[in-house]
Image (cartoon, rainbow, N blue to C red; front, side):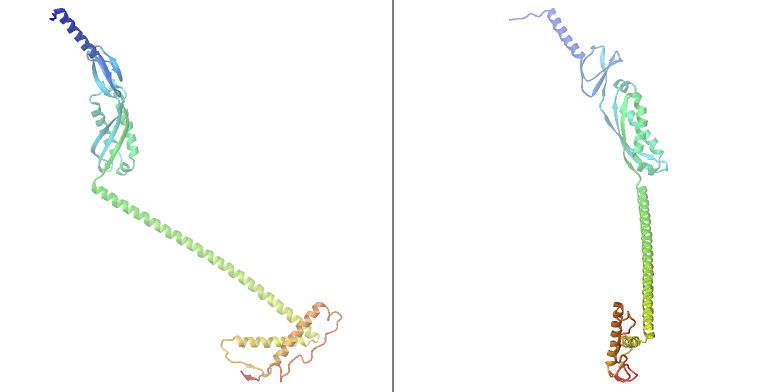
Length: 342
């Protein structure tokens, strides 16, 4: 079966095809993170945001497709001369984001190149006004100054510079070696200062300790001397009291007191002979009954003293009976210069 196609049918088909093409040209889809500028006869009219949009075919066209996401731009390594004429190699990164697609598209040509050159020139300006020590120790300050300058310069372009970071600062090798020697010398200096300070502190503490020890020793000697003097004073008082009592007893006619003193001196003399380091031999009386008799006299004196304290013998003025033979005689009592060698 044959179908005849006349001119009207061909026109209808061509018209339908052109309509489909025109409608397809007027439908635009913008991806997320992008914005498109629309130009009508070469003039900017509006901006298409992410989503589906319709434009007038043939009359309107897409001008620029701007990336609205934050972008990272590497700053290549470059030489920077510091304030003290030190040459260092510096590189970094710039983070920026387009906020206004129309300004970014029509206020500047080649946006990334403009931002890069602006960052390079300001890096040289900022870092060139600082000493090498400041460059190496104050990166945060450098980053803050660069960010403020570059962000203000790019604001008319509809761009927000969010961060500028200096990645690496590399001084020359000879300068690095000199800095290492300087750092080593400085550390050795600090170590010597700390060591000297420690020795000084230890000497001070040792001197303080010795001072306190001497003070305590002096106080101990003073206390000991005071107690020795007090002991000697009491001993002298006791001796004086004993002498007074014996004198009173002798005045009353008590022979036992004389026996006491003679026996005491006798025993003291024997003790001195026994403890002397240079005496190897000494003489004793032939009869030891003299010493026993003298000790017996001491016992009588003690009994009499106890009796006087109890009030039994001296209350009515009567004198207790005396022992016979209180004082040993020359033949059998105290030594008179003769004796046998032991």
